[in-house]
Length: 370
Image (cartoon, rainbow, N blue to C red; front, side):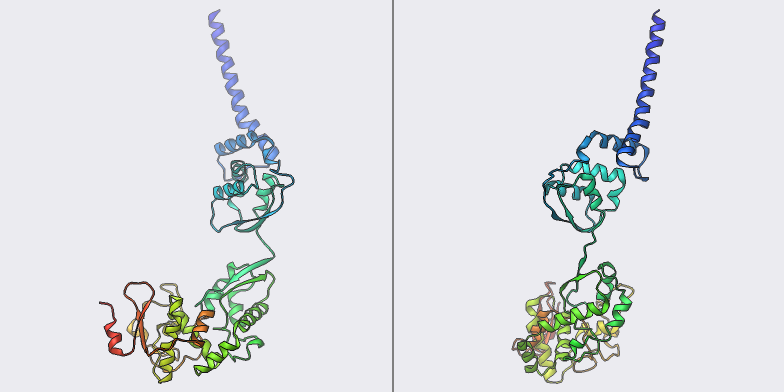
């Protein structure tokens, strides 16, 4: 009799194990699929079971808003931000009830790999599942297009593919060869130098001609009568002032030195001395494919001999056109340079970005780094 009892107990245990296996491998994933859709193909079998069980354990929390009367708020996802960081900040912002619940749902569905960086409009009146769907789309009607000080035209063009604007770099550069009529007062050969560094809020539907017109008008609006008078005082017309400002921009690391650097170049121009500016040679050399930069650094002795009208070591006066797009600070520095007797400057040896200035070449040599 005892033997039969043992067999019965063993059989019961086997059945119980099979029942548990069926529950784990069959019912739990099937139930989760019914309620939340199919799991991501990238999940392993064990992960599918684990996350299916986790979702089912959350009950109605995934479909119940945190606050049915909650108001919308802006939530921004940084480029490259982790999923756990996003879900944690959503909970901290009182948009969802649980970072863990949202994380589990995102991983189960595979939506964790398709979160969109950018600005989202979310509300605690939305469920966690609704929030997960909203995080897949960050396509506002307007985008912010940023131009950095000292960029040359090609660098601006290179930023277009990730800007949100449907304008190719090639179309941009081609169109920029013909400046908008609003810049006629400066008579520039191209738009180079007149892309005023700024952040531009634009509709995604902005065309290349509209983009160039907006930027050109922004440049015009920032050139005051006082600045124009300042350029004239330095003996520069508008186009010449922009050319010189483009050099000052590339030579200056610390903005507070711009007016003194501008004074050195103005002094040199006034006596017919070559400007001797490295950035003009860098511009002439063009793209450095080895180092993948438009600004070759350091320059070799052969580079300094490169024959180009932009090479201010060889040719006196200003180069034929701007070499970069100067900031408003650089333009103001050219309009109102410091009064100085300096004709030379070079970077300080402490790598601070500041320069030492000299009146004579002998002083300039003495300022060299040991």
